[in-house]
Length: 220
Image 1 (cartoon, rainbow, N blue to C red):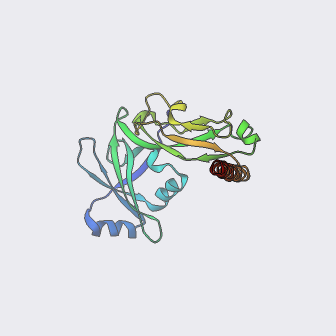
Image 2: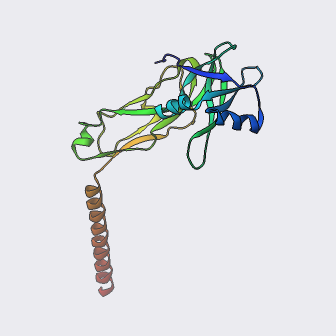
């Protein structure tokens, strides 16, 4: 399930501090820092358009990147933070962390639900409610899965899928140490409302019967 490691091309940044960062942005760059791996932090900058394209493609922070900086050895990194402008929501700074292929890292992996259409619950008008569209897993840096696939083809109305029902990629483990819900198949809203009404009517009828029984007891 491991994927090919994509390149992330950056340039070394000579200056540090707020002034150098502002200059990088004026030059059409997004400043950043590479840290970890037992080495000194490395100031870098990435062309704004290149970074924005990768961010829009999705899963930027869940991807292991092969960082290429001229004059430096290629190194595998993962994005630990991408700061954005609070108004424009555009990237203004990023932090990258060096990793080895064998390093363990916590990542949010997207969940794909297959077989929903045509499942027993779907045929009865049920609706799949997704509780967790992504799940945080502890994975090996060199074996990051693209996704977690959940088979919903046998789900009936009222069924629930928990993490224990899912086959995880080899070496991957949930970061939450309990069996949590990922999705459930709920009854259609009309049927659920009718069920509630029936329960209310049954309650009222029971109360009337009980009151009648009490009254009869008093007469005796």
